Each structure stands twice: as C-alpha cells, then as structure tokens.
Length: 235
Length: 235
Image (tube, rainbow over all chains, first blue to last red; front, side, top):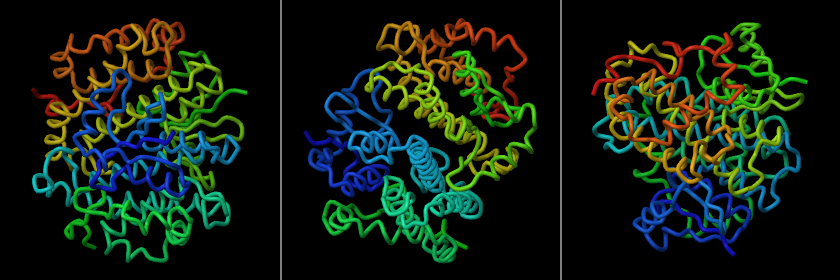
C-alpha cells in the first residue's frame, strides 16, 4: 500500500521536505490534495479525531497518521530501513531535522512576524525589522551550525557517501534561501562550502533528479514559506 | 550513571519541560549549570564538535548528547521503558510534544517578535500586535487541539491513568500561560476542562509533588519564555 501525503497543493512549503525524501527513496506515495484539492485536505484534517495533526503536512500509512515534518521523515526512515543503524547517529539526524524545522519557521516569520493569517502588507514594517535581524544574526548562526554538522564525515552528505533526510532537507532549505534572499545568499557564496556541496550533490540522487525534472516538483512562489520580497533582502 | 542536563540556571524556560519529566519519573540527573553556572554551559556547548545541539536544553547520557526538548523527552521515555509499548501511540506522544514546542516558540515570540537578542523595550509595538493575534487566534487553536487530544482516553492523563511526558509538559504549559496571561486564562476558565484536569492532576504525581515543594523548582520570572507584561494580556 502506498503512503498518502496530505499537504497544500500549490506551494512547496513544509510538504516539500517530505516529497523530496519520498522521491529520493523512490517510495510509492499519493500526493492527495494535488489530486483532490485543498478543500479535501481541510475536510480530511477536520474529520480526524483525538490526537490529530495540528497542521499539514501529515502522512497516512494505514492506521498511522503522522504530523510534524521532522517526525514524518524519521518515521519514513525507520519504516523503510533507511536509518544509519546506530542510535547515536539517528538521534543526530532527527535533531538536525528539528533544527531545520525551527529555521523554516524563522524564515516564515520574516514575512509574517505578527500573525500567519494576516497579509504581508499588514505587517511590512515588522517584517522589515525582523528580516534585518534574521539576515544579520539568526541565519548565519544556523548556517554555521549546519555547515559544521556536514563537515564531520567528509561529505558530500552528512553521513559521508550515504544520503539521509537531513541532506534532502538541507538542499531544499538552500534552494529556498536562494529564492527568498538572492542578494544575501550571493554575498555568502563560499562561506559555507559543505552546504554548497550538499546543495549541488542532492540533485544527483537518481530519484531526486527524476523528481526535479518532473511536473510533480512545485516551484517556489509568493504563497509559500520562502518568498522573495526585495525589501527583505537588502544588504 | 546519572543524566546530565544542561540548561540556563535561572529560568524555567524550555529546560523545565525536561526537569519535570526527569522528576516525575524520579530519574537521577545533574542540573549542570545550576552548579557550575551559565558560563560553564556556554563553554560546554561550544566545546562540542560536529552535530552539536543548536541551543540548550540538551541532555548528556554517556556518549549521547541530545538537543531539542521533544527529542530529549522521547529519548528518556524510550531509554527508561516509559513509552506506551505501541508505535501508533508513541508517535502521537512525540507529535504532541512537538506541537507543544511550537506553541512555546509562539509564546516567546509574543514578547520577542522581532529578534530574540533585542530587549523587549525595543520591540514593544510589534509585541503588542503579536500578542493580540496570539490571544485571539493562535492560542485558542492550540488549546482546542490539546484539549481534544486529552479527551480521547477518558483522562486524567492523555493515555488515561498512566501519565506521559506530554502530561508533564501540558501542566508546565498551562502554568506558564497562567503566569504570562492571567486575564486571558481566567476568561477561558471552564473552556478546556481536560487541560484543567491535567494541570491539577500532574502535581499529584509523587515525583512531581516532591519536586514542586523543593528548591529545585524555578519560579516563572521575567527572563524566561513565559513573562507577564500587562499590556500583552489586555482583553
């Protein structure tokens, strides 16, 4: 039986971190809302009782319904036997995936610092300030953190020759940052060589290459988490 | 060998979610920075190479060093055989713990919407707006989510009679919200009966009762995540 992924159909967003891993591992899945639409997603989520996911993305695997991007990726890894086989190493993978989720939230907050349900135009002043501190302080701190982590096994991937969900997520993260902050990221070129290496190597994974060339890949756009607003990318 | 917990010594913060679980389960641990000070924490964190934690709290258990609150709690649960024994249920526990971590971040952002390293006084206007939307939209959405989750097994705890790390964390969350938003929380009294039940029952867990009566328990204060600013709690 194939996995069912539920996520908004028109943005890469958080769902793309799951899509990329499913595609890299060449796992069988249905991207439910891309067939049935966003209304079906809302309906499905609300029909779930008790400990349902707080928000998309979530993955349905038979009786299991799993929310939270980092948890979905860890679940898939364990279920498919794609972990490292060592507890200490697998813990590092989850931890880094949770760090990535935290950074993704901070990226979203650069254009929505006041409330996620308000328009950007209604929180532009705060966004301008927020993005300044994000570019100057927060993002470099995270990029140093991830680049250091990547440096421990000689590359190109976090664990060396074998890729993990952390690598596919770091690829997506770097692509998103290039889209949202082109000036900033171009000024940082050469500063984070391990991140650049993972960004250029992940597309060579067979499943990823096929995915990126397909219509299943959703381009970054102005409704997603990574958005380009010139005023938020000024040096 | 006892666990080593590293967290800022003067605030409950994210570390308190770990402390509460360690104490509820009556596990042996050293709260390192409360003995050695905050400088020792910074030094210890920076001395760790490679995939080190991005930020405190982190737990050291022999060769394992684990960051991210939800991951620490899951690690302790599995290591000590405190899980439910069922994958589907344990997945729900992690997922809810990650949802709690997301809400804790949103609570922090009510007083630090622009940047964590700036003073509150330098981001008061944005905080005022942020807190308004937090009180009106975000917090109720989370509280409904957690109250629904608690309703599935008949209480008082998430899984029924047996407490888990989700219960100790929901207790801490409710205590923190009562401290930070007393007006709001008093207006919500009776709306989330399962959350109120877990808040009043967790202190009866033997280890928690002993902890809350001890000097190890750190009171909420104006340097932590849950802070009381009258202007952020206006109805």
